[in-house]
Image 1 (cartoon, one colour):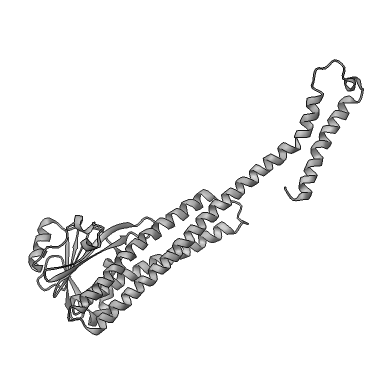
Image 2: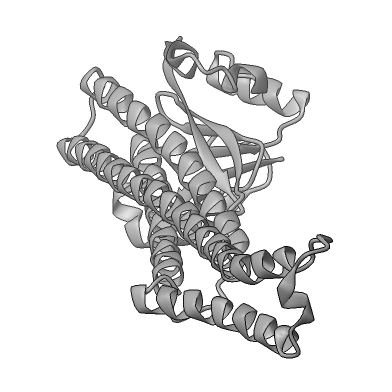
Length: 316
């Protein structure tokens, strides 16, 4: 699928086909024929999906004949903790922007409406690219804000011990999911940080307006600040993981302690019962009329005394 956008009276008008007048061409899971049509329009090849998935920086950020090709990893379906991560390529030609993607990041869906508020800055392909990247960064910031709130909720759930019904297994699952989400977002931000730096170098070699250069610098600073925040949240997730495992260990130790105390309490009665259970012929206590109640009383007392001792020492 191809969506072409061109500026008309301060609005991005959409065309569902390749247009020679398009300022921005958005290629979504394109067919071979659509790729050929765009390449004829640009005059050079656009990256294939296999090229977009390369991890080398030189394969993601490079200059082609008459244009700059930049690839970043962006998330989609971010309402859950398991977003779809896939590369998106931004091809900045002389007079138009081409994006190639195989999933639906929300920033691309909301950008046309946002572009109406920024129409004066979208007269060039560079302006569209920078505004689109700003929308992507804003979306990542929203994801991190939501993750931070949910991590704070997990923290309260772990450390507020008045909630005896806390299910640590579920907490561990939630902590792991948040850790995976932050890892994906950090990967995306790293690729965007590299892209912003590369775009800054590209802007220096082109006749880019000063205000656009300033926005590129601001974009780069925003990405780095989000990287720092994501790093802080990752450290907090590690702390919560250690804390949860510690709580589980404390609960297990408490259970083992109870069993150990009970075993010690029943050890003296067991000893007494074992002594009088021996089959020796000469055991004078066996002939006592009060031998049985005395033995039972001795077993009860020998069990109660350790209980009070442990209680006094605070072991129970």
